[in-house]
Image 1 (cartoon, one colour):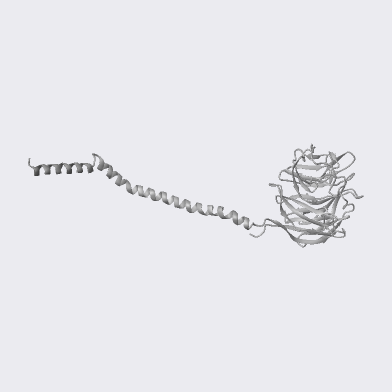
Image 2 (cartoon, helix red, strand yellow; image 1 turned 45 degrees about the vertical axis):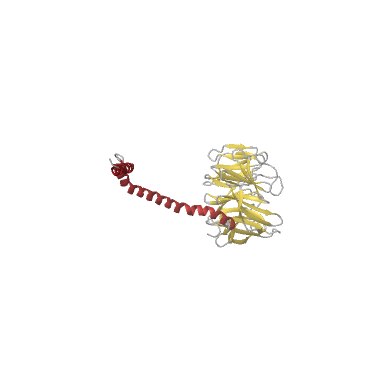
Length: 384
């Protein structure tokens, strides 16, 4: 083989080796075909995933942005909470207590009961009731009538017909009827006396005492209905009365006894029942009590607290300083045990407070005690 043939042979072998490097192995081409056929599906899957990510981002971004910017904005521009506003005010002769019902506000005066039209904010009837207006008189509505206790000489309970504004019946009681409420088909009246006090039941169908007296603690005051039970507090403990049977269970160990709101030896009061608790007044506090044992579960600071009721899901405390004559009403949230609603201040000593369908009703007396004003308060939630 000459040199030219040898060179040609070497070149052919080199080309064959280089070609072999780039040749496909057996079965490679079918795999390549399958890979190429899958390529459109992969592109579609990638596009779908991208679409989901974009949609999620569009949904989450406003929420994240609100969380990032909302609190700062709310702190810099806090929304005003609800507050009490004056709906009406009128001069009255009654000093309280008072109650609402049958489209009216009923106020005890000296020897009379006044009926106030809430829409017109004026007294529309004066009903003679000798003996009412004493320090411990009470008034309530229910069973088709207005009921008031009298302990100023003519001792007993008046029944007022709201249709005629006249006394329909008088039930004589001894010795000293004070607190009164209407619940569970009966009228319930507390009577302090020597030793243990009693609660009597009046049947409104007959206007007669029904059943034997129910014995409770000494010096019973107001009687309140709530949670299917009647509650009455005295100078030593609070009594829980089963309205069906008249059975009594007593709770001791609470803040019973002591002095009243004016510093006198007191006939103790449970003012209201609500949010699973009893509510009453202590020294510059509104006290929340466990109904099972009378123990204080919360003491909410409320300077010069005078009386408390439960309305619209809140405990409302009437406050004031006598005889300087400056008072107001505040609302306490039972979820936090904090004052969350403040009312406008009033120039007048606090007398009594009641709740009705349209708001709160408060009696204030002027500093000299020569005239009284009935104020109607409504709840304003602020701007929308």
